[in-house]
Image (tube, rainbow, N blue to C red; front, side, top):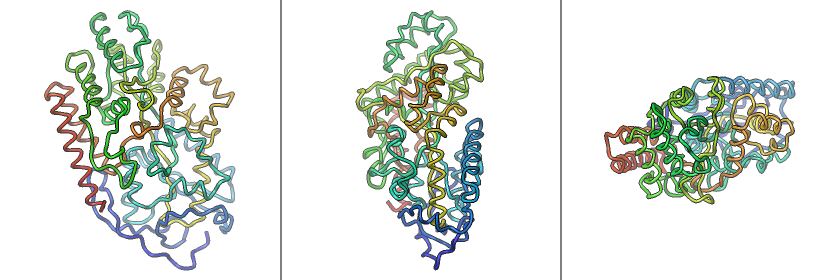
Length: 472
């Protein structure tokens, strides 16, 4: 790539989250060039246009880091290989699997401090606040505006776009997106005489769980992973924000956790009571443990990610139905929050040509054809609405009803403050505090109200500590 005529000033001092994002430290973010020989460059937020790539001398190298493993990781590499083939002589993408999402963001944090960040960072949902705060990236909104012939942001599903938006600006483009679903064992529910039409609300699900436990010997009514995502889901489905103000979607992010509102208390309390009454099976934080118990017929229902569709297929389970995640709040404001990961264009230390080439890659990976192939191979939901008009996708849905249910839930989920999720760079610490307190409550060792208050207080302290060290 062409070198800049003169290096730009080094980036200002910024706060950096420590490894695994459990604490915050202050570091100097001296972002160096990443394989472009472009010299040091600060993130300006101004997006370059197509002319920057056209002026490049020789192929432009794009590095991509991700934590997408398993079948999804294989599918991602296949799409990158196809992109490289289509752009031979112009763009070369070098993708690198960094281990878990936590491993990937820890390495990214170190690379900000030491230099050598990737051109494109694929990072999971809860790192959104942190990545915004580092000021290393240029927003997807700005890149799309500067490159109108590439990705049309209006084609992104509103529920997915909503999660990665702050102050009305889309920060990153979703790659692999999941949602929570309710899975039910058809035979066990029939034996308990459960009416499926009652399972659209949390109260209906709780009543069904109690009916199964009372009428089917040796079977628990429901299981649910006790990781932090599920308490965020119960909150979103109750129609209230998880953090204040406005789930951190305005200004500089969240200032506190809210976990004790009446709708949250009712929703979380409903699930806690099922556990303490012996109706629900406590499988801990591991989603795969919940899946295994459900597949073995130990529970009649299960809350799990849409990714469990693939897991149940691998387990050889049949005779189950996937249903939308139940609500406890009004339909117009309540719904599920997404999970998964998104693609960020790193700007600091990367030439304009590299940024445009990165956007070309992201636009390709988010396109309807690529998303359709990726979704079929990985089990994630396609984030491009153009897939809905594909004859081959319609054929796939006709043979794979759980995916059709997931698609309808995406369409039906309102893009509201409640369903946007909490935006804070302290999210990993927040989840740790909430899970610890909820384990005590669901295990019957601490009253639910005391646990909620304790979690709210300790998680808010994590957010405040982060904001202080971040200079917010």
